[in-house]
Image 1: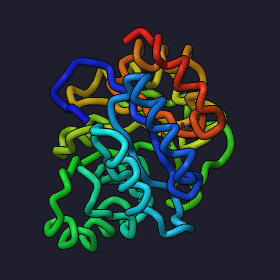
Image 2 (image 1 turned 135 degrees about the vertical axis):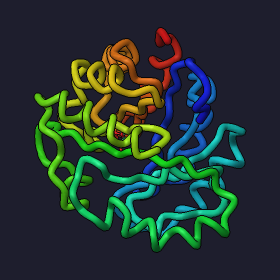
Image 3 (image 1 turned 90 degrees about the vertical axis):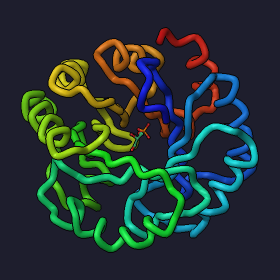
Image 4 (image 1 turned 180 degrees about the horizontal axis):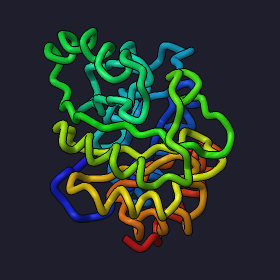
Amino acid sequence: MNLNTSKKQIAVLIDPDKTDVRKLVKTIQQAELAKVDFFLVGGSLLLKNNLDEIIGVIKKNTRKKVYLFPGNPAQIAKNADGILLLSLISGRNAELLIGSHVLAAPILKQSKLHIISTGYILVESGTQTTVSYISNTTPIPANKPEIAACTALAGEQLGLKIIYLEAGSGAQNAVSKEMIKAVKKQISIPLIVGGGIRTKAQLETAFLAGADVVVIGTAIENDIKFLEEIKTIKR
Ligand code: 1GP
């Protein structure tokens, strides 16, 4: 991920639990053709204990960067390029604001991972998402863009380097353009938007509203052809 560019970036999220290696190689090849910018790897659970292997396959098949997007502190792999060190600033669960980070800190210090401190903001998106259940936090109401904007601003004032506005993987509703605009207006650090984006139009809307990076996971897992559509995206 390039934090010092105004170019709009697209990231593909690879959830190790939902990925088999043969399918992954194809996804990487298509992602290359679609000019995707980087990969995120992670998920709420890790049933298959295959994090290192999945990252290894990505690194072998592309020169694009791979960042960890950890659902929990167990998801640290030294063969990635970097890590989104997530602080769940929309929630009030101390473990996910600072506790897990204390446990991960010495492991991260010994690694060569590029650490990107990230303000992670969960937004209500229709039905309860896995991330909201697992994190035991209440997402910000979808119709309260001002709460999301103040949360993001507080994150920037605390020194976080990027904000990730998240509807949750497979979300029924993506984050609204009104909320993206409100957040973007308040902050000067890069804004990542993800969760429930499954059409080219939604992706373009997110970019137009102010997202610097859009993350796509489920839409590609469901149909690899979505990467074809992305090729012609305006950004
Ligand atoms: C989830 O924002 C990412 O953390 C991507 O969501 O799987 O819905 O694309 P999707």
